[in-house]
Amino acid sequence: MRGGTLRFRSSPGWVDGRDQAASRRGASAGPQRVWHGLWRGAWPVRVAIGLLFLAGEGCSIKRMAINSVANSLAKSGDVFTSDDDPELIRDALPFGLKTIETLLVEVPKHQGLLLAACMGYAQYGFAFVQTDADLAGTDEYERSTQLRDRALKLYLRARGYGLRALELRHPGITARLETDPDRAVTAIPAKEQAIAFWTAASWGLAISAGKDRPELLADLAAVRSLMNRALALGESFDRGTIHEALIPLDALPAAMGGSLDRAREHFRRAVELSDSARASPFVTWAENVSVPTQNRAEFERLLHHALDIDPDRDPSARLATLLAQRRARALLGRADELFVDSEPPQPKESR
Image: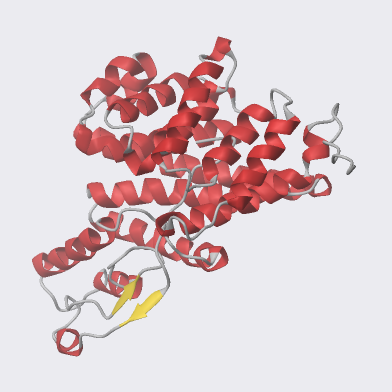
């Protein structure tokens, strides 16, 4: 979560393949294509949608087929990984997300699909909607505002799916998160670490995008409790993602529960756990700490470091690195706006 960068992972393009014998057996047959652009090993979304409208099949057969597709989609894990084409993913994701929602109409309690919807809408909202809003020029205020409003809606949708998943396992937890969040999250076990994290991340992103919505700011304690619980369940989750998400939270003023010392430790651990192979921790710190503290030298040093990272060094985060580097370039281009009282570093004179 940030005003800065959550990371987004996925895997590459379309891989063709056809099980002709299976396809002759009907709609419950094996995969006709494997969509690695959104979910590794997932059945094509056109088959998933087709299953919802089976005619002449028994209800139990239809339900079995739907659950089979749902399980295939949900087992994929991350929404992005190693793709090197952000625009391809931008175009493909909405259809995949709507497919998940279509399946959830039929299997509304499917935990894997609820997690995929929560994670997917949060990631799409940040990578391709809020980032566009944040990077819009000063002469694009109206467009930026519209994009930010859209991002907020996507984050709230993601949060809704996350809370729905938690509520199925822990009835009443949504209300308890409002009244006693620290106690409420103690019921969340290790196997629910991912949904705890993504619920917190989407909720935190909503707060960041909805700065004019004070009712959202009141939920900050719930976000912090969920994020801290996810961290307590294992700091190595996705190679330091939770530590990175906590940087913006702890970069907040002390009156809002922040601590620069804690933020610095989260940054250190995020870099260590990712083996310094990911650009996003450096962009997150530069945007959420260097800018508020008006440390331009640190800001430029960290962003240039992020740009120097080879996206192929960690193939599983290739797309995340490309997206973070896009943000780094845009932030460097806006440095004079962000540091209004400082002069850019001057090159040393040669002797």
